[in-house]
Length: 123
Image 1 (tube, rainbow, N blue to C red):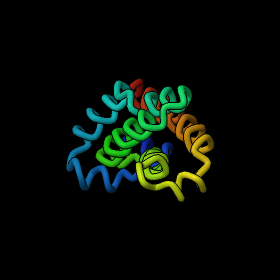
Image 2: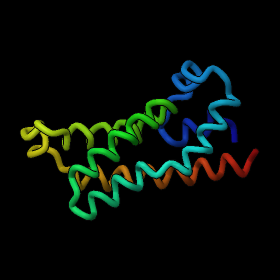
Image 3: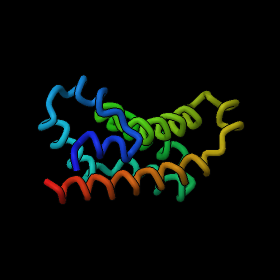
C-alpha cells in the first residue's frame, strides 16, 4: 500500500500532508507514530466518564495532531467536538449531539488505525 492509497482509504488529504511535511519518508514516519498518540482514545475515555473539560482538552490535542498529518476526517470530528465543548460556546453545545460525534470519531479512529497497520505491514 502506498501513502496515497492509505490517505485515500482514511478520508485524509495526501496533497496537504506532502505540502506540509515535504517528503514521503517523513509522512510515513509520523503516520506510523500516530498509532502511539492517545489523544483520540482520551476523547472517548473522558466522554465516557462524563468529563467535558477532559474531552475538550483531548479533542483539542487530537485536532492538532490530525491537522499536522492532514487526517482530514478525523481532524474535522475532533474539531467539531472541541468547538462544541469550548467554554463559552453554550448555544453550540446545546445544539450539538456530542455523543454522536464521539461515536463517529471512535469509528473513524479505528478505521484509521487499522489502515495504518496495514500500511505498516506493507513496508
